[in-house]
Length: 240
Image 1 (cartoon, rainbow, N blue to C red):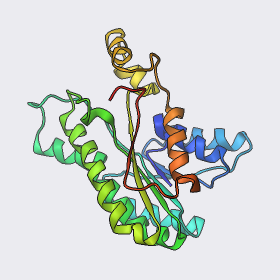
Image 2: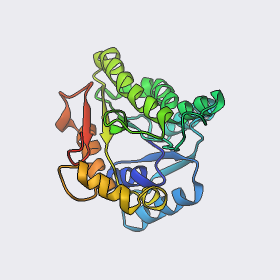
Image 3: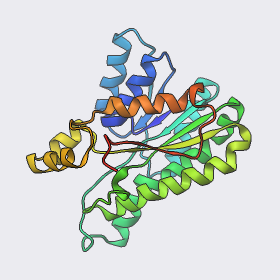
Image 4: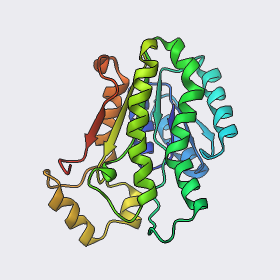
């Protein structure tokens, strides 16, 4: 199950897991993009993913959606907490309401999705949780302080969850992507100046694409990483 799976890195995650023959369910609020993605995968001859409309800030909807996924699959082996919103803002613009909303869409749901999925992951006997963080809090980034705070919190959440539920043979790891060239990034944030800044900071002098994050997620979901938990895995071309 993948949250925020309709576009960007999430879309690549859904496609990448489906390409491995996995039965995939994904949650998102972007109905049209999600339907097109599911159909595109089905047309390619792979198992059609299950899409459920779900607002990750609505915890009742989150719990209901997860219950539906678990019932449909008769269990759950892998959870990827990917949904996020990297909305830009100045310090002065942040109200308590904006703070709460950005925390809800970037951090809070990762805990409560995990909580709701935990009984099924326990039954799996070898579950894997992958939490999407970011290098933004390590650089450190600017212009989105609430988002960055949430992404730092995800690393702490990952560490404590790994130790709390490791006894059930459930592994919990975080992925910290760098500047990944998604369609949204191209449309909203990538200017010639920012592109030059990215390449100047990275050791690898090219832009990174979502599929490079997916490969790390596939590794962390698979038995190949059976002894790896509680770790933060950076995919940033050598920026940090």
